[in-house]
Length: 305
Image (cartoon, rainbow, N blue to C red; front, top):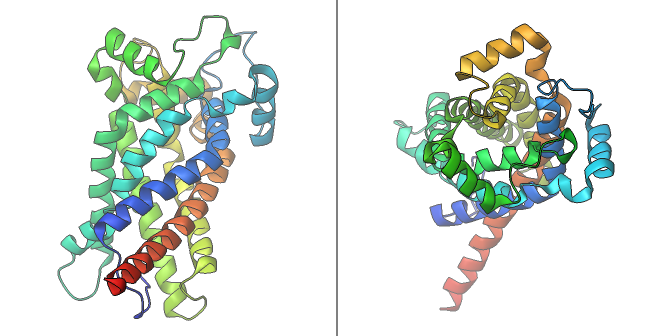
């Protein structure tokens, strides 16, 4: 990222990829209950039955889930979530600076090159990691309280059943809305974080350290949630739907609009921000500190040899 002092050694691409993957997994483990609450709130309204559990608010959803389905349900789909972060975050965040340099033509890095880097790394990450996203959402959304037997018993069972019943392409279901969502998230999140961090350091408001990373990550998280929420809800609904419920992504969006109104596109907004904001803070702070420590360790080893 931008804003490193002259005394800092620029991290290698391998260090960035490794640091991004580890930091994202740490952030996912801590914030996963918020993500599960977000998914449950987003699909609420899809199952219009008297037996359907109604969720209210972030803490209310988490509490209801823990009481009715057990605390472990808050982490249903975590293995797929961690697999997703290893593929998604390590690529979209770890390669961001490298791809940004490729698009930079002059000495100064332009906004266009930042956006281009975000588009590229976000698109590649989605294509590679989409199966993990499908499995994660399906496991988070399923509930034994709605009557039918749960579709999946675990992460790898979900991969197998989806591939056998819906075909291998079923693992890439919802790629279009997820691609749109992740392009928005990647560009907004990384570019906003980069610009905020650079502005804070350049104007000497904050040094390039934890407080600066914290403020930049919170602002990036809020901007990202506002822009990505409608696409995120459609993506969740479409990915979680059984075969035949929606004919296409636009059909899913139109069904939501006609049956539930425009507000349906912002269902789960608060947990989305809680999750994305806290995830950003944990991930970026860990990412920045980890890559610095790894480079210091490498310098130490180089000096010793």
